[in-house]
Image (tube, rainbow over all chains, first blue to last red; front, side):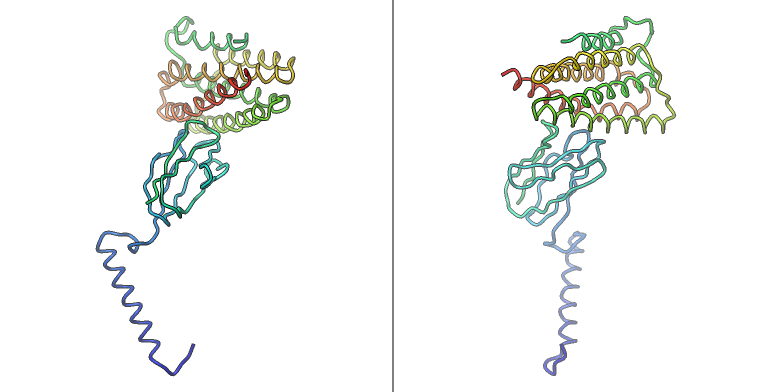
Length: 119
Length: 174
């Protein structure tokens, strides 16, 4: 990409400078990562419960279920996602694409329920 | 309720009522033996059921019992090893073992739908008995905080197993 036109170096620098400004503003506003970027939320499968059992997230955010029990669990919805069996000490993640309230259960342990609220 | 279940219930109830000679409840080494034995008898029943169960749902339940109770026992064993608690057999653990053996002997005589019903009936009684024992005897008497925490942590799984067994029981009765 070597061309006689324009001034590619300085154009790249300008973009980089703008990005740096955005990052600084984001950092100043208290965000650990740039504003608008996807976040990751962790839900423990612990004591045959989802902890926390209700999590509010934005579209594009990632949710990671970590199994802290000595036996398998699942995080399963009616059609949206299904982790299948998550072994002890293992995890499974899902990136929410659609807004809405998504209830899920562990199919192995009736009564172990959680909800994702995707905004 | 079958004979094996009655025997186990009586054994655990004795601790609760204080009818045994022991002045206090079980010690941590005795609790460790009770927990490991109680899990083991359900693993053994599950192994028989995976081979003999007729209904798919009963077989799947049995497989899960093996997995879950093996997991609990692995963690319990790791914990008592770490704590240097040596499981000490006692009247309750021996009685649970005997109840488990009697249950296996009884189940081995049965086949098909009859086996499924007897296995699931026993699972309902067994899990209810263990939950009662956890609440009335094992958790209140556990001295070591980590041992107590483990008992509390696994309790909801026993409740889930009980509910699962009851739902299968209701279907089998139809």
